[in-house]
Length: 151
Image (cartoon, rainbow, N blue to C red; front, side, top):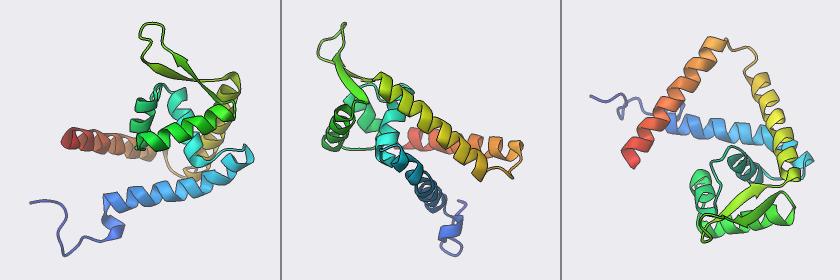
């Protein structure tokens, strides 16, 4: 028998709803910080995806952001226009166009990363480290399960 049933399924116990709501609240808290830096939440996600090596091509970035290819191209265009990202052909395979942060993009990603760290440390300030570790481990486990079952 599964965990959920029609008798007790409601938003406050739904992992899907809770994860979505947590994301929405975090986004609302972070957007003003990013706005002061002149970028949007979506632009931040793209920069940090490239920064951590998860979105080093347009296709990889689209997958990481769960964006369609057209929207990703427009997003990259905006980042390139702002001087934060460059497109460069790969030397080994000239068909591939890699995304790289410029020096300004690197500095911006570092500044914003530090703001995100400070925000999460503030939000979780009264949580014991063991609870944070447990929450992260459970979310990583859930992500792995969903990746495996939806592949």
